[in-house]
Length: 189
Image 1 (cartoon, one colour):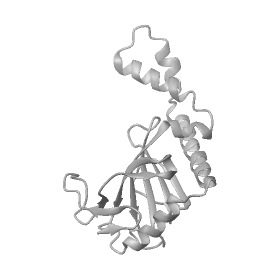
Image 2: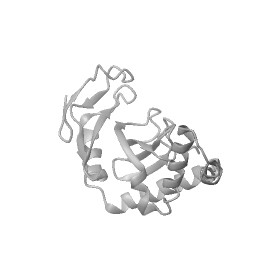
Image 3: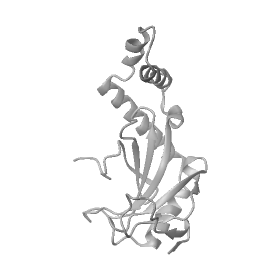
Image 4: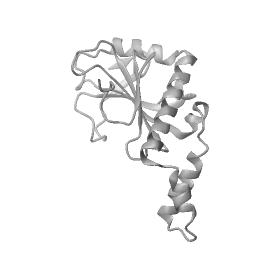
């Protein structure tokens, strides 16, 4: 199988979590949205049996020629995600809590340093320094209620180390969701 945008697609036998019909880009692909960082792409054919390579390529073409305003919108929503997370768990309270301990064990020192770094995240323009994309998945709504191809960008992020962050774009150019990685493409209604 070959994509016009991604090139050869393969079944990756070494990745145990892939379902049998998923296809991944043979190589990591330079991704303009992330300053040409090379990222592995996956087409989730088992979850989206009606996904076609042509439809995926159309979404990828839009994603690869994104409007800079889209990236600003994603940054704003990611920053809001950080603020909501911090408000819910009191992440930055760790600065005060851990800062009073004179001799911190390694785990506490690591947490303290991470809190100090996150305290510098004060606006949406800075958010990209705290987000690292790990994989991009193309799929369709598994319930077939919503049309389009979804570009689900899976990321590690410094504030949500356990669940990471996902950015979901419909047809590669319309922001649908920024959230923790929970397997959902859409917000709860």
